[in-house]
Amino acid sequence: MHVAPPAALEPDPAVGGIAVDRLRSVIERVERLEEERKALAADIKDIFTEAKSAGFDVKVIRQIIRLRKLEPAVVEEQETLLDVYRRALGM
Image (cartoon, rainbow, N blue to C red; front, side):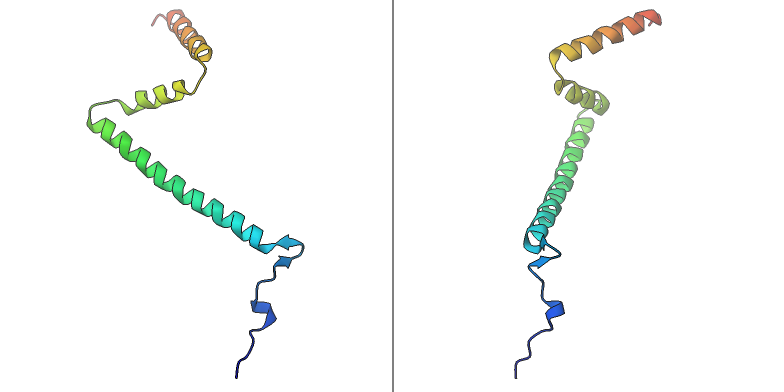
């Protein structure tokens, strides 16, 4: 004899006007991307560890990476201000 599961245990394809399958899909995609992000963060950490063991200054590498994301004019402006501030402080 086959007994059908209670209706309460079966997922409703639209609960309260929400498309359950679509919601589940969105959540699962975000979860996968978060896992990928964790893996990438670990890879980046490994690269910085490698750079440090090769004698590079990781803080400087991070600064260069940050600067490379900026427009050249913005970098030039920041460097000019840094130079002005240094001279003002006698550095």
